[in-house]
Image (cartoon, rainbow, N blue to C red):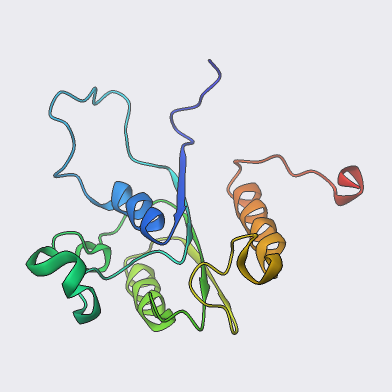
Length: 162
């Protein structure tokens, strides 16, 4: 079918970013009947405003006492796939400082990541509907650059795209 199981990227925004990141971090929820010959873990991540700390006090209502179990920052380990995080610096749903902390911890473990913060951008800033797509094209270009850099997309000269 032409699918390379060693080059699977997962991505998402907000809760979808949390799910994509969780798929790379958590093993305990794998199906015991899963075919272990082919990994279900992604080999790259592209995350937009991902929920990083579900154990924080502001998430208590959503997660109750189980927030720690689902919190990527509380289960961070070395060996995560290369990741790109695009995040609004004015995000009050998932504060930018939380993502910076996550990236600092991941860096200490030797994980490869890129973080782009967008001034004045709030939660969901990357959507084409948010502020008439103000950051939409830019975030897609960053995603393309990242996927090209890690070899998931061909490096096409800009002149060929015009």
